[in-house]
Image (cartoon, rainbow, N blue to C red; front, side):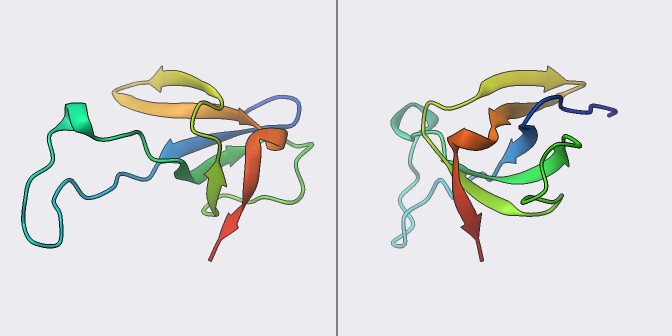
Length: 86
C-alpha cells in the first residue's frame, strides 16, 4: 500500500473489538457498532501531532472509508480526532 494523505488528514485502520462477551456469548456482526478507535498508518506532511502507530479515538461517524487493496481504512481530518490512547 502506498497512500499519502494530503492536507491535515491521517489514514487510520480501525481497531476491531472482540465479538464475544466476558461470559462467552457471541455477538453477531449486525448487533455490533463500528469501533471509534484505530491505529494511524499514514499522516500528511502537515500533521505534526500524530505519528504512525498512534492509537486514536475519533467520532463514530467521522471520516471517509476507503479500500486499499483488500483492506479498509478511514481518512480522517485531524479535527475529527479526539485524542491519542495510551
